Image (cartoon, rainbow, N blue to C red; front, side, top):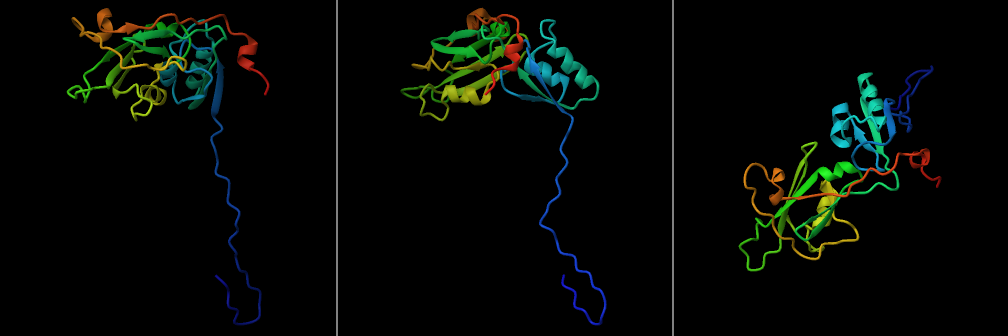
Length: 225
C-alpha cells in the first residue's frame, strides 16, 4: 500500500508485478513410438505403469522390441510414458458381423481375431409396440476386457446411436465408416452353459485380422508435412 511520509528520508514502496512465475512441469515424460501386439494405432496414449501398458497394448512379444523398452523404463523409475503404436500399411483390422450389424476391431492386427461380440434385445423398450433398441457386448478372449453397451440404436439421430457410442466409449470395436447400420440387428441365443463368450452359438467372433509385414523405418518416421 502507498507510504505516507512524515519526515525526510528514503522510503521504499513495493508494487506488485504483472509477471507470473512459470510453474514447473514434469521432465520425466518419455515417448515411445513403434509396434505393439495390439492397441489403438497412431494416437499418443498415456501410461503411468507397465501394467497399464500391458492392458492397452498387449503382452511382451519378441516381434515388437518397444515392449521391452517400456518395461525397462518403468523398472528404472519412469512414472509416465506416451505410447504411439505404429502399424504397417498392409496390416488389417478383424471384422465381425453381429446378426446383421457390421463391426470391426478398433485397430489392425491378429489380436483382433480374439474379440467376440454378442447382441440381444433385452432392452428398456422391449414391451413397446415398435421396439428399436438393442444391447451389444464385446469381449477380448486374451486380455479379459469386457464391454457392455445397453439400449443402443441404429438411428443416427438417437442419442444412443451405436456408431457414436462405440467411438466415444469402446476400446475394442467400431462401426466401419463405409458400413453404417441399416437396421436393428437380431439377437444371439442364450448360452447353453457357462459364459456367453465361451459358447460359439451365443456370440460372433471377429476374424481376418493381420499384423502385416515387418515395420520399416519409413513406417515409424512417417511423411514430412
